[in-house]
Structures are given as structure tokens and as C-alpha cells.
Amino acid sequence: MPFGSGIGFMEVVVILLAALIVFGPNKLPELGRSIGRGIRELKQALNDAGKAFSLDEEEDAEKKQ
Image 1: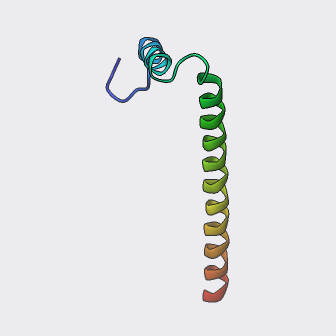
Image 2: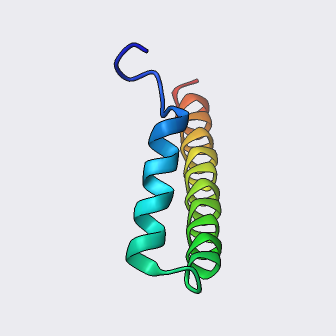
């Protein structure tokens, strides 16, 4: 597998085992929900920032005309 092509199956297994050892089986579902919520919020913030940037570009283009 070339460098930077993503995470393979064995890497995912190692990460999950490490998380299980560090956090324990009772905390993993809560941790997964928190990570999922954080990723969703990050995607939404990036989407909102992209929309705002597009609107700024459109306003600048209109001012130049």
C-alpha cells in the first residue's frame, strides 16, 4: 500500500484495541457518539464557512462591475 493512501484494516483493528484498553468497554459507545457529533459539527462549520466565502466572492464580483 502506497504512503498516504488511507488506513488499512489492521490499522483500524490496532486503533480499536488501543481505545478499548485505554477507555474500557463501558466508555467506548459514549466516546464514539462524542467523536461522531464532533465530526458532524466540524463538517457543518466548514460547509457554513464555504457558503459565507462564496457569498463574499459574489458580492466582490458585483462591486467590480
